[in-house]
Length: 321
Length: 174
Figure 1 (cartoon, each protein chain N blue to C red):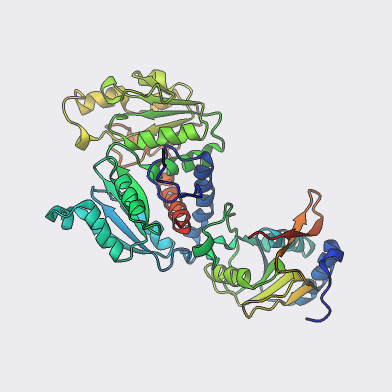
Figure 2: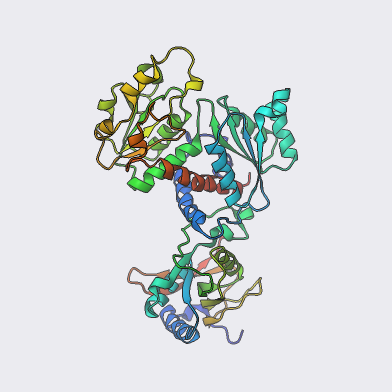
């Protein structure tokens, strides 16, 4: 099957999902990101790579952190960034997504950063650009429905590599609302691609999707069991806005069974790190003592996220057709 | 360029000794001097110069990948090393070091990157060899040899595990 993410030379043309991404490309992104980290500490926090390029942030769904870090990443690459509030745009007046894309392309867009509540929307845009031979325009998926959030997955891998150096001896636990989480899916694909021998998913039956076994993931409904001896804990936000029907008795019950407290954290390895993609719900999935504790690397994740997004955008923009 | 040498006879260690001599004299009395090597050959040279001149705490590395003028054509290279400059370049005398001076484009990119770290008082350029073929108005302050190399050939500095330098000529497929 054609992988629309790669061009005919096997280079990254669009970033849509970590699934199907060769390990060499994942490592190239992480390596390049490490060179971008220092840029933010300099007197001039910019490099001229994307000077003269226009990046359109198309967020059809709310986001603060991801949109802001994409905006900062674009600006640190010297690109011009145009933020479109899609909820208040022509799409809400009935224009189709692809007509919107064609109109923005006519304004000489070089890159679209797309977040959409519908899984597959960035794929549709990338395919349209390929079909209409607009090979100079790139798409970055900034989160689509329950499907994928590849830059979050990559920044999570960057964070793990930063603290743990090597992936091939790690046990990583992803905890919480796996069912609704595009972050979990991207993390699982990335961890598997990078050779992590044991990936665990911890959550109540109702929030664990089917098919995790086939992805090589061990599932646990008992959090204390699942956390034993892990090196990395990735906490997920309880996604109230995606919750239809009674999947949980109550938020208080959830915290009692799946909240990360200092006592539960003590079951993991003593040097385990705690990650969270944000926004955090303190007292729902994570205790403040853990979120603000010495093992939390939640704020470094945000900082690394800028460098990782700079790496993704500069690699894409340098690959033509 | 007078009497360019054939590259086959180049002894990189002898050239290094020559360059060190020139740099030692040239940096005498320089205000707030520091050495910055361009990845990778220039970084090796800078490291050794800094050791021989007792300036290891004033030595940095530049990778100019984010400043190259052929990015739009070639994209990012497969390997980008972090730039590492731990001292303040504002007001400093920066000795920029490269192994081979050719078109001048790498030097331009390096100067552009340096200025994003601060405003140096002066930048000087040292290169082990100058192969001519300049496309920009760039000249080195210190050069150990001027050589003639075919356009389709690439001249590269290599460093052995023991730290010995050699110069090799490769077919350039780029």
